[in-house]
Amino acid sequence: MTYGIVALAHTLGAAENVIEAAPRYTADLERIRDWGYRGFHRAEDAVGVTDLAVSAGAAALAKANLTADEVDLLVLAIPDLSEHLYWDAAAACQAGLGATRAEAVLVNQACSGGVVAFDLLAGRFATHPDYRVALLVTASRVCETYKNRMESDTSVASDGAVAAVAVRDHDACRWLVTETISDGRYAQFALLPGGGTAQPFSPRHSDPGVLASPFDRMQDHFGRDVRTMLEYARRVQTNTREVIDRACKRAQVDFGEVRHVLHLNENAKALRAFARDLGLDLERTNAELAMEHGHLGTADQLFALQRLLDDGRLDRGELVALTSTGTGMHWACTILRT
View 1 (tube, helix red, strand yellow):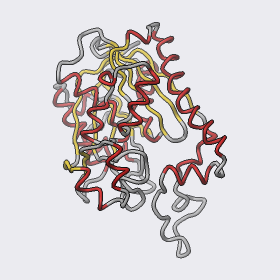
View 2 (cartoon, helix red, strand yellow):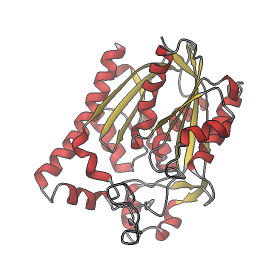
View 3 (cartoon, one colour):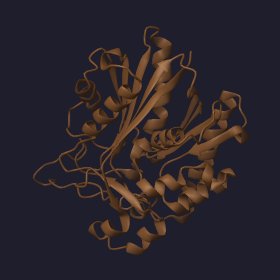
């Protein structure tokens, strides 16, 4: 059993200049300059994550010359909150597209969801021989009430969605493997205390606040223990390489054969370190696109893949690795052969 990507399409929020917009989000302008971002995308206030997802999904289906009623499986991967509580954003996306035949599945494993979801597609194709067309939609819409685009992470967060139409037995942009490493010891590292069942909204807890900076969260989680913080940083690095090595081994390819490694749209310093740790030229990553568009949550890797394909920068048969690190913690790698 295998499948390949027939078409990719995206929808982005309005483009904004990072340096011009930064004073609205942070007083630490020097840190923003050091990150190296030039642009990001912000959706209009009335636009939700499922609006972006439906727009990208419809565009991808049109590009593939397929109709919504031909979709057997719809997977929506989001890194954050959707528009409502007690609400299935994947089912809402299915309804918005008119894909009423499709099974709808929601993936919400932070920023790793878009890479992990490839394995979900493979599993559904394997267990449902009648499934022929799957639509994977990766989408992110920052809820600015709870998250600061330029302080809550080590990146500038953007709004947008990318959809991929995957078809059974299609031989181009073919899925080979997906590998994931999970380590739940760090599950508490990136949570917002209020608003869940442990501390519901109430007159006493009406405002859960804004997600703190990664530095503050790390200090709180590790009790300011420098040794454990260094161990965490080391594990992030080694698990990234480990999950890639596992994927290459399962795909029976050598890492040296991989033409591009498309990671999170992290800041410039982080992406330079990522490339250095893997022994890659920076041009073989998504570093330049990241600086132009910001961090699109689960959609970074598919956005970079679409740009490479549309620009004719991938030859037939080349290997591409999509990699991610997501709070939880999860490390993931999907390998495709174009």
